[in-house]
Length: 553
Image 1 (cartoon, rainbow, N blue to C red):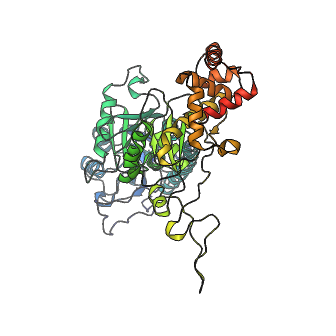
Image 2 (cartoon, rainbow, N blue to C red):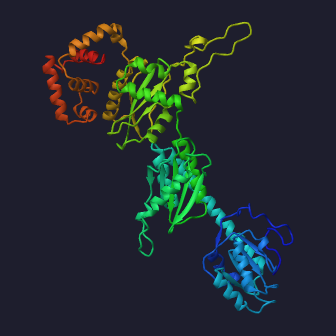
Image 3 (cartoon, rainbow, N blue to C red):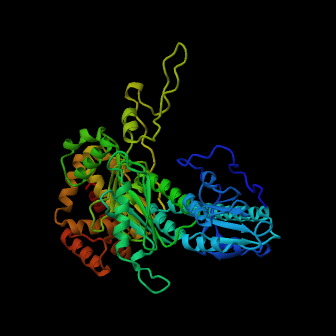
């Protein structure tokens, strides 16, 4: 009965350092699970009913304190038991989880003084019958731990797959938070370093109710915010994670990677084995999704984009963009109609290969992106760190370096415009044709029209194609002058309606969807255009000439 039952430090060896005890190899086992093993015949006769077992150890020393790591079920037959009160006090001080006392051959029954000491000091006391060897108890504990470990690994694997699937959604940050809250059965919140809520998912702990019907204290949300500030990386030395308990609610906070100071905060009713691992997976994913995609230079170019698209002089911002183009302007809206926040818009920009994203205008407006293309190699490396510019072929001995077809000379190497605008799941996109930096304002308008066309036709992507064919044979200055003269009678709303109507082949319903107006409004505007232009809009020649003129603006 008194032989060691598991490979932990034996008595007489050097006691382990209390400063860095090794962690448990498997999830803890509730005491109730061990007691439920009927073949052992164990019976709790004193102390609390709840305890978590991390280890099993057998000792007949009068004071086993130096050899305990904490969390043990200590098994003893009481060979050297002389002072039960002091003995139990030392076990509690060492952090033992429970005491299993074997009756016979030393003691016929569990000493009453030991029962009283365990009740008084809150240590669970189990009676081990004579027919149950201590090694059988140890084997049962290890079997239960192996089963718990298997359940934990299966749970973590399922959670990892679910979180990875959520990260691939069009709205990855909210989706990951929602899945994390579902996996942990609580609330997941993404906070800034100042405690401002960016995203949240799951039930608010303040709205949950105890089994007894008492609502959770509303201060839990404030406690979670304060805990998040502890790990926010606003000062050197901040911890990567922190935990706390507020009433019956378990709180935890994790700092995300990057310099934005974002924090993942969690509030759950219970804390189960594997929760920390699942949260760690979410932290990695959120760090990648929410990490800043731009440094100081890219932030300046993003600001230049906003000023450019809001009407600033192209000459003012061209030096900040660092290249003359061509550039592609993209307008995007969520397919389900929900507004896009900065993180979701940033994820779209990352998918398209650009950090130049304008998502902060609000008011339900479209997300705008500026996609560089055809820039010099050194600029391509600066604007798109993950892009690989085309490079000249190696120089052969005795001959100059050869260029790949379409490549510029090595000293003026230029990436060919890449057709990188592809449909994105969950988004409707409208893209302009590649354009120089001096014409981005016009490209912005074309991208807006392309997005309206895509929404009207329910297409995931519409691209505004450049003028080509016969229309390209007319000098641009003459074409623009003719367009101004022909369309002079029309106001801007009428011209936009006519352009959209012609682009959709005169379809009233689709034009109404694209413009966000009633179909009767479209009919009235088109009729008014015909009157002002004194033209028959059912005539194909008239439509062709008007389309040519409208394409110039």
